[in-house]
Image (cartoon, rainbow, N blue to C red; front, side, top):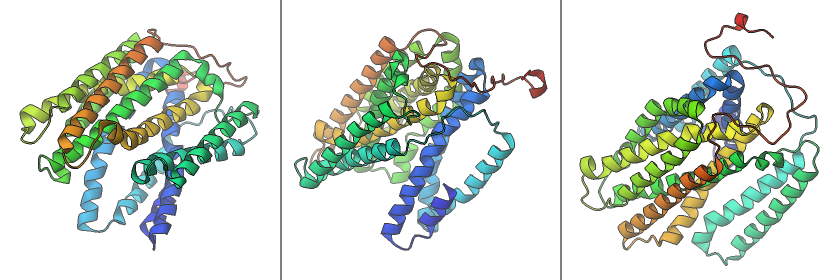
Length: 396
């Protein structure tokens, strides 16, 4: 990731920058699932939910800080510095990982699924291009139709490849778990609502209420603060009582916040009109994120934690893409009356979020621990230790 960031910073042309960004994306795809897999193998089950909650809260903080720091660097120095800043951060992460991250026993097979990786990339590329360009070029445009067809064909080939491969990149057996499939369905709905509502809310604040870009971003800082303060507690709660209740209540509370947010319009004061909706939405999101991740990882065996995390992360990213590409069309957002379109889009997002809570209630088990439908690998990694245990207290 650091190497790709350096290539972005010194890119001489737009084409070189796009290519370096693609490489940066490949590296980034290795980081999030890996970080959750490290947490899952480093903490015992009783401590894992709290650790995942801390991960969620800190991720929210950095997500909020990033645009402010990046905006400052672009204005004060150069856009190239938004990539240069990654180098010391990556150096710090490498130092921490080499000194403090334990290595677990490998359980993967010896055959790399190259064909699955290629077909998955082609499927995502084709479908993504179609979703991005469809609203611009028209859904009957030849390039959009070709990309859609190629993406769907590659998707079919990917499924066939994975079923036949001895060591598939994506073992479909993990979807036999009702909790795993249900949690990912809830992820798709909740993150579609989150991405769509935030996208239009920021534009509404700037365009109709006269906020600057920095002010519009700062308006949602309470969400980040609530994630930081409450995510770890929500994760611990999910470990103690099971993720079903928080994953049901959280999206419903977030949906109420989005419905309140739909009342924002020209002249709406921030303290009484915007802030309360943002706080309610943040409370619901804080109750949802960590238990959702806990539910996903609890539904797969330890040797598939990375795969389960990767699938869930890919679903969340796809949800954002679908929301931004499809919601403007469905809600009828246009430049003549943007506030009306914003309100329709936000109410649709609220409905999606509430539906996510209902899906969680129907599919997530109430117990604190769940069992996967996949058989365990013959060689198991070492048993993780509790956070308050010293290494010498654990027998190996």
